[in-house]
Image (cartoon, rainbow, N blue to C red; front, top):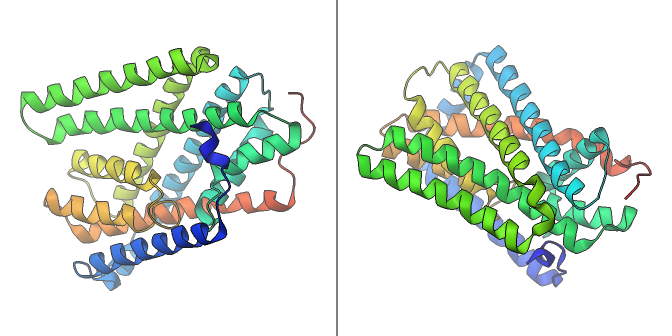
Length: 296
């Protein structure tokens, strides 16, 4: 399973996957265009509170720093000791590749390949660390999604469904780590807690985006939509780390909860914009080696 990150694929397969992502992105925006006036979206953005947008950007950057620290926990579990600042630079470069690299190699896979070439780190172990870091992040998103779901969906049976699903998800990942990824067991709970911190920072980022657009109601519904869109954006279905699919979820989610779909699109595009801004600095480390000599 861990080798999937670094598996080489034929060129035609890479091109085909990229083409499909382009098609999915175009189809998503075509669908959105049938429901939304993009001119109004631009107007809403221009009227936004820029101080709140700056605060949202800073919170997103802060969440990425926490994410880099979480990954380093798993690296240390396999005796891969990377100084914090160097790990942040490598993580930053990975963020850039996740958004802008058109091929089949994601930023996550790049980190695995880079560490193998730089310090001869094990493909298998570093792949496992990167994958587990992703799953830890998704687990935290899922828990917050369940919490917000209990607030927006009425009925005690829905509460039981979300609560029991959360417990099963935590237990399931823990058992996988315990029996199949034993090296990472000491880092499971610390990484889990840091993962919650990452997502809470992004939740506050969402609230600042809503505040910038003068939205002061329906926070629970917007939170549920945001977290659902976060999970969908992780799937390699479209360009730019979820461009198109995230907006699709925001617009359809807003329609489901009888919220303003225009606002949903604006919030999603603003989040994408600040993600691009926070990730673009990673391009610097294409030309500047993010790691100096470190001990394995």
